[in-house]
Each structure stands twice: as C-alpha cells, then as structure tokens.
Length: 114
View 1 (tube, rainbow, N blue to C red):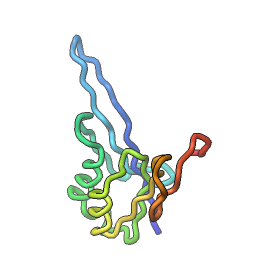
View 2 (view 1 turned 45 degrees about the vertical axis):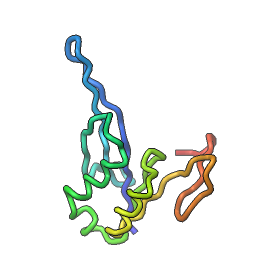
View 3 (view 1 turned 30 degrees about the horizontal axis):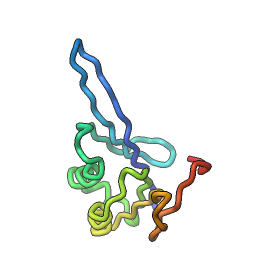
C-alpha cells in the first residue's frame, strides 16, 4: 500500500501595509519527497483542498492503487471521506479526543508522537 502525507502549512507575506496570507497544502511521500502542492486562501475550508488536488491531478490516485493519505484532524469530513473512497483512496487521521475511533482513525492524545 502506498502512503502519502497531506500537510497544511500557513504562509504569510507582508508587503507594505497590506498583509497577505496563504496556506500551503503539501502532499509528500513518507520520506518527505513532495508529490504535489496547493496554495490556498486561508478562508477556504481546508477539507476542500484535497478534493481539488485529486480533481486537478487525477493521475495521483490512478498511478497509486490502494493509496493511503495521512492527514491531521483538520481534514475530518464525511463528504471528503466519500469523495476519496469513490476514488479508492483511504484517509488516515487522528480522531478528536471526544469522538470514538471509526474505521482507520486512531485516537490522539497529547503524548502521541508525531
């Protein structure tokens, strides 16, 4: 099974008196090799970005059958799960401390090593 990591990073840029902010969504291999990325407006729901990445680059899923994406808690959404499942992609992320683990989710605590 191939694995990829999906990491959101906030990026900021200060140009004169105007503040510009972007969020970098990076998809990389477990070794850290970048596969694809997206710069998104921080006002956009980050759960929409993986769907847009897969739609814009469908070969990411087609070239990697049984793809497993590791992500953080910001990507918890039933709609995203259905979208990825329809394309044969599994999403592994920690669940909220108050939620029971479902499927491949793992509960997360402060003592979890990243």
